[in-house]
Amino acid sequence: MNSENLLVTGGCGFIGSNFIRHLLANADFKGRIINADNLTYAGNPENLSDVAETRPGWYLFRKADICDAAVVRELFDNYGIDTVCHFAAESHVDRSILMPDSFIQTNIIGTFNLLEAARSRGTGFRLFHHISTDEVYGSLGPVGAFTEETPYRPNSPYSASKASSDHLVRAYHETYGLPTTLSNCSNNYGPYQFPEKLIPLVILNALEGKPLPVYGDGKNVRDWLYVTDHCEAIRQIMEKGRRGETYNIGGHAEMENIAIVEMICDLVDEFAPPPKGGSRRQLITFVKDRPGHDRRYAIDFKKLHKELGWSPAESFASGLRKTVRWYLDHRAWSERIRSGEYQSWIREQYGERE
Ligand code: NAD
Ligand code: TYD
Image (cartoon, rainbow, N blue to C red; front, side, top):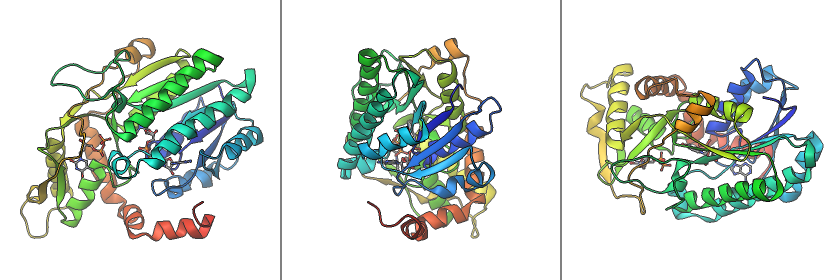
């Protein structure tokens, strides 16, 4: 990827931290990464502590809020930003139902601030890559899949705020000629995912013998992609994707939630047999459904495959096995997040949240 100073926003979150690790392991990448993250509850500098130690000079972290236009402008000027890969967002649908405000601020206003700063760089600016989700397309019936031509029909405050940011990115390309690419990806899973999302939540609850909450009838379908496959797709789109274009990214791995929860139970039983015997499946608990719960997502990623040759390396079975193993081997990571020890460390290190 041709970039001297790459701004990665939200690099301390789940996908952003995997992306930075992935990019720095790629011999073709010669630039410097500036990771700007506000360290909300979902951002954890520990996700990249080894990178920070081994790549001084090539990787630097700035605690910065993308909702603050002056801070964003200062970042661009100070570090001579020529490329952006924009992950920073409020990302959890359930939280967006309870507290939509921060979703509007970060996902819409934050993206606008970044686009304005990128525009101000003029012709020296190379690329603004925007990370988005398949949830902007709404819900599917039992057949068919989202293509890049599917009309937007977002159903949650989260997906509506992401849809809004996608439209802004498109408009900046059409109106100002800003070099942009945009990717809409299906549900990710893998190491470093915050344990509020289905897969890590179920792994940790299963290990701890807690109830495994399944919303509604458990038959909602998502198309799952292992996080490093997503990272490689982003890298390829940034390198070779046509400017002004959107690419869908998916795993060809449609699964009902209940089937995933059962697979996790069986893997946890295999790796950490329950002390008193039995099966973790006994912990499965059907709970009240999420309001506006999209029934089914599925991604058609033919465009990405045809134009750039990308396809996922992991199957759902192989990726889930790796993921369960990772959470079992990194109990301290999740315990720190859950205990609140991590939040007090952030307060000490960076001062109170602004
Ligand atoms: P995450 O919640 O794990 O991480 C988000 C990161 O953004 C955190 O580090 C957080 O501190 C940071 N952040 C939040 N508000 C900020 C602000 N105002 N200023 C600066 N930083 C801020 O999210 P994720 O799962 O890694 O998702 C990353 C991106 O990928 C998001 O844009 C999301 O919409 C998109 N996406 C996620 C999935 C998925 O399954 N997780 C799928 C498709 C697309
Ligand atoms: P989630 O991981 O929150 O991702 P998203 O809502 O962005 O798809 O949820 C994935 C699916 O799992 C979704 O259909 C909601 C469901 N779900 C549960 O059944 N129980 C849970 O505790 C959670 C967090 C999600």
